[in-house]
Length: 62
Image 1 (cartoon, one colour):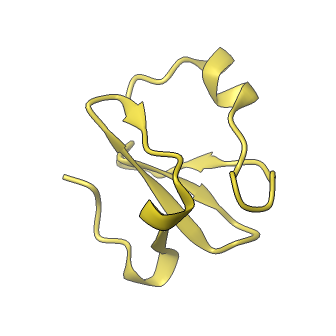
Image 2: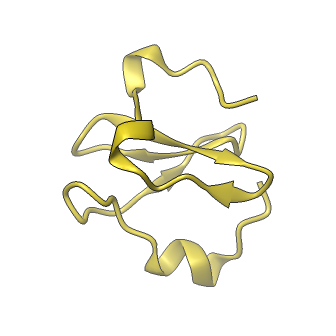
């Protein structure tokens, strides 16, 4: 994932407005409070609550 730090600094979880953490593989943004991951596809974060994947079920967005 090549999301710029400036973008990561302003992105927030759409559900709880909490901070997001990039997944190590760079294919998702995790919300530790909601325990979900928002996929990143083609370097575009999909920040829709209904597209979030429970962290325990996350296998990557690729």
